[in-house]
Length: 318
Image (cartoon, rainbow, N blue to C red):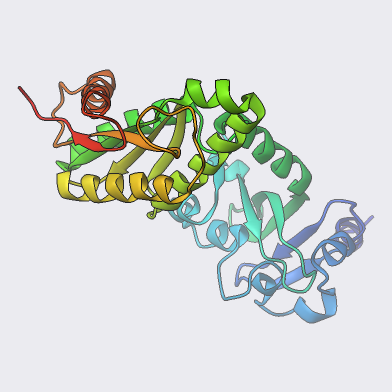
C-alpha cells in the first residue's frame, strides 16, 4: 500500500470509528468530523469541514475547544475552562478533560470526557490534532446524586453536619487568609421535645421541615450555608459578615419562624413554635479553631434560652 493509499485508509478508518472524533489541521480547520461525532452533536460533517466552527457543536457562543488549546500550546488555560483536566505523563502524549457542554444542535446538555493529542510528522512538526469525545452524562448525574445524598440531611434537605463541618473549616481558613470577618448562627427550636410529646414525631418532622425552609430562605448569598446541625438544632455560616449583619439575619430568622404560626400547645413560653438563636461574629486569627467558634455560638444560644427563649443573643468575649 503506497503512502497516498495509507493516508486515505487512515481517514476512512477515523471517519467510521464508533468513538466521536474530529481532527484539526495546523491552522485549526476541521479536516475530519466522523459519523459518531455527527450523531453525538447533531452537526453534520458538511457543516464544519473546512471551517473553524467546530465550537458551535458544543457551546452557544464562541469558545476554544480542547483541540484548539493543544494546537495553540495554551495548556495553562485548560483548568480555567474545564471542570476536570489532566496532562498525560508527557505533554506530547495528550490531554484529558471533562466538561458540561451545551450541545445547541442536539438540544441537550451533556457531560463529555475529552481526550486530545497532537500528531507529528517525521521532523517533529504538528500536522494535526485529534479530539475524541465520550458521553458521561448518566455517570455524572449519578455521581452528583450520590454527592447530594452524602452532603444533605435526609429529612430537611439542608446541608448535613458533615457538610457544615467542611464548610466551616474552609470559610475559617479563608477568613484568616483574607483578614475578613466570619459569622456563625446556632439555632434551636424552642421546647421541641414537648412539641413531639404533644403532636407526635410525624408532626415533629413536618415542623422541622418548615423551620428548615425558613432558615434556607435567609441564606441569601451563594456562599452562605444553612445546615441541620442535629436534632432540632440548625446552623448558618455567614462569611464576610460582621456583628450587625449576623444580628440582622438572626432576627429575620427568629421572626420568620414565629410568623410560621405553627401551633405549640406544649410550649411553656408561647402558643406557637419559636426559635432561639446564638450568634458569634469575629475576625479569626490563625489560632482560631472551628470548635472554638461553635462553642462561642453555643454559649450565646444558651444565654438566649436562659433569657426566656424566642430571642437572639450574640457572643461577647469575657
